[in-house]
Length: 199
Image (tube, rainbow, N blue to C red; front, side):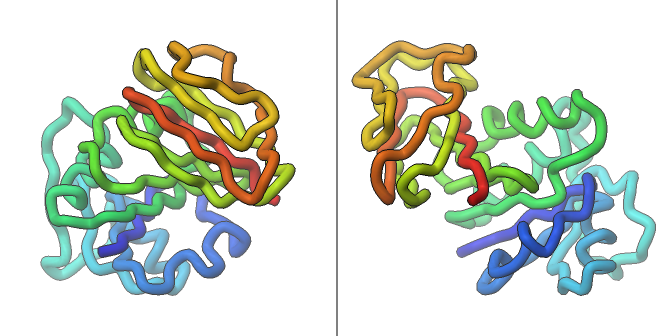
């Protein structure tokens, strides 16, 4: 099952949304449900503590009241528990700097298993959680890798600067790499955020 989570940040441009919604169930993260509906998309359900919703959603809501984590983190975990294998997140740009960092922190709190992507105006952040992934990003595409948790073995193959079972923590070590073929392979025993530039 495929899902899209629409957050309550800046409304994403057509460049971000085009081709992304097809085949996915759209969920709103709190006030993001209103923004998705205002943009013309059918929202299956609004998720979160529901303190930012302006519309009446007629029972199409699931309240997630736990204040110890963000609405995005709670929504990601709920969808993972429901069996969604891929979750694309939009509307996550804008707002305060703390919310920006909070989006990445939510990638750490989200359960292992689903493929999770955060769609920004200039890039897409792919979460890698104790796994190996092949990213089809095209030759010559710039990308950056950040360890959100300490990792003992990180591998990057198919890039200008490769890593082979290297240790990595949150640092600038993986900043500004370039793919050398149509895909790159990235693996880690912890959690990585891989930011791929839009081309």
